[in-house]
Length: 286
Image (cartoon, rainbow, N blue to C red; front, side, top):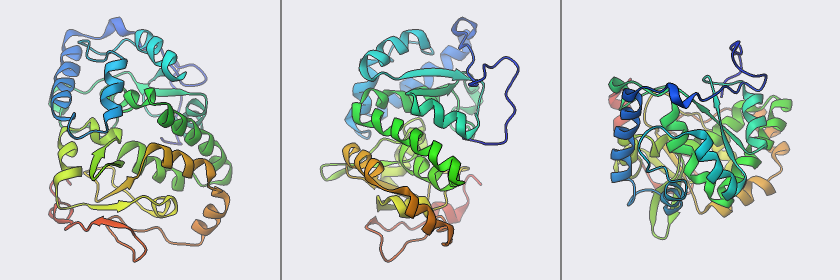
């Protein structure tokens, strides 16, 4: 999400563009296949089962970058969602409008072979491999629509920054309980080979029970692995909390309270694991 952007001349008023699937080069398809193969090999024991079910239902194991027309035929049948191509980052309200209408925006470009392990701006692998499989899950699909509707309201109240933190710590970098285990579901994790290991196995990050207001106060990092991961109990609980919560009073409280620094813990936190923060202190990537 981003606000101060200029719409490219070839984009429609809603910022969509043609995917132009036939223009992808053989090298670009090979990059997708390399990324897909290593994630598909290591994720099954780590990711929430619904993610792997979505990959299978959408037939994303087919080699090469997915053709959105083929993908949407199956996705629409499952939950009424569609993937639409955009030239890159889009303004916040455009983003929310698409989600509220069950359209997921995806950049059409793919990273280069030299960028396999890290890319700051989301590409088609992050957007489609990371996000789209869970849109087959009816409850998560409803959560994404509810988030878009909430985003339109937040924009009118000047509270997009707070709501963006909810997206970051759930849709992008969320963990979920699976019995006595923790599993991945955030797209920023499942599309990253390194973070798929780090988020569950490394002693460095804090792992904290999910609380909407706490999450919406918490800053995050865009340049490296996260220092906090918030753990939801289930998609059903995440949707319930989102739909049942009156965000108005939360926004009013947030206006008068300082944001929580990345890595900080509060006495009220339901802490599942106190992180050493060793990775962040070492400044490995930064």
